[in-house]
Length: 310
Image (cartoon, rainbow, N blue to C red; front, side):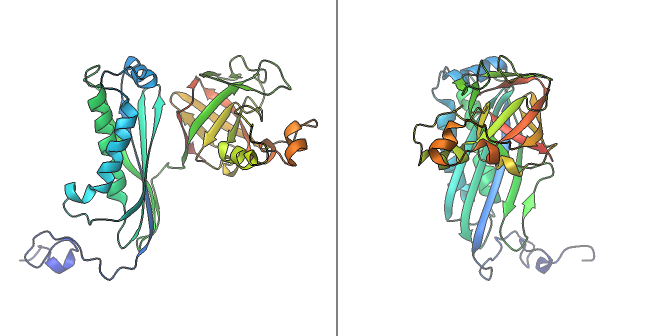
């Protein structure tokens, strides 16, 4: 009939016009990665239950993490046209923020078809589990923004969602009361517009209000100096999962309500740097970045620090 699609025109429809699982026999096996994200919006009092472990059902994030991994592994059983995929890795991470819990899932495989649905299934199941674990405390939580962030591999090429530039997890937040001293970890820092970190010796109206350093750079030096601790490089924020030095000046970073803008990449090493004397190199001069605060908020370990523009 004119205007109707023939089965041959659609990869997932057979000659009878019925749905079918597409044949991937002739596709080459390649490395494939997909990352998805989502958010469970909730009241501040409910967020605090997640932070403190006070939920009646127990450890919210531990249970949700297992749920996400299980959902990725069994995605083909719930999404009808998905192929069983031999996953080589599933990583589900959380960021506890002012307005709720952020969720990110990364799935990997070496195969003929991608793992986008597996990553999305992981995020969805983790989000629903967060809701289930907390519904006795709050029934009007909202699961939102479940989306594919990026994927690589396969004949269709790479994909990155508009505005997706990567994200890091905050490993530690640190302050120092005097300049020229190492910083020490604290539970939480307050970011003040035009000033930086409240109570930190380096706060003030200048272009290096907040210092950030990736923990990966610290880990490299721990083989030479095992006792290195958060704050030893005078960083305010220690992150994991993002190449900070690759971010251009002007990049906007967001964590919950707080917003930072990158103003400087690296710096000259301190003349009396004890770490450089002991190891022959330092991390902050080559791996660290500096920012100013453009929107106030708090920051603590476990928060998600997202690149929102470059």
